[in-house]
Image 1 (cartoon, rainbow, N blue to C red):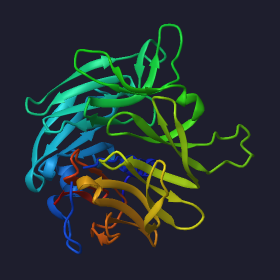
Image 2 (image 1 turned 90 degrees about the vertical axis):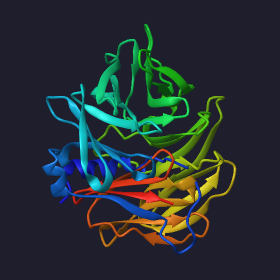
Image 3 (image 1 turned 180 degrees about the vertical axis):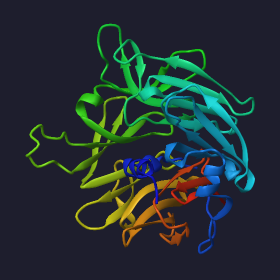
Image 4 (image 1 turned 30 degrees about the horizontal axis):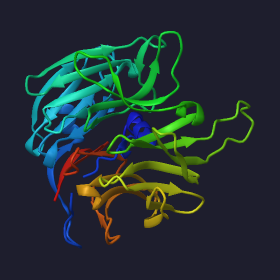
Length: 363
């Protein structure tokens, strides 16, 4: 059975990170090939506690997988797995509370955020070294990332979502800060007053050109515990110039993201009926690509293939949807809850759950 931590991560939608990039395979042919297959017991034999895996990231063409393990009361660890799941080595990171990490495009470095968004680290996976590069005390001048915490290796370098605490006031702007060794975090994208406008941010997706952001947000919960709690989530667009567009409202909206062209976005919406995988442009009409009890979409190879989960008879299944034809291909993973993440260029996918870990190379 998957751990309670795994189920919490799954429900939080951490698998819904969009890493968008390439062209797909011919219709009817599986666009993926398995490169790494490691069982749950094999992970334990490697000295890794599956209950404390924070995240897994995969390199280009799924040649390597890096696991981040939070170890209570001691340093966190990055574990590097190679061909067929062979354990290569580990790198200690001086973080007592690791939150998330991203790999560089070449897979040689890792960028990490920990301690509830107050500390940032870099790790050299070739030299097998790591270092703290910035720290900020909560509610003090500086930068602090707040939930939902995430890190993305953008064209301008690693970016972390957060708030900026100034000398005698608190900035309530939604911001993405670049993290560089030897320097304090610097804003790469910032919009005015979004934290005040959107009280409860669930997830976000920054435009590939760092010019705007998609935000999934929920109505504030009532103070009276007996009052009905709103279950509507909203998808909104905001840019640095102040433009706001309300795109959709549903009982649940999951994991919005951009295709590489920067014009088309995709998301899963659920209302009273079944879920829908939606494609649209900001000023265009929504188009339904697939229907079902869907969640956690991730783009592969330029957005041609969209990996998406579907609940079937209370069991999670993973499918690949062809964006051009609407064809759905079943990925035939072991039974049980799982989380997945794509490589930065969309050529690799790593999937992990209570049954173990597998990586795939997409054509």
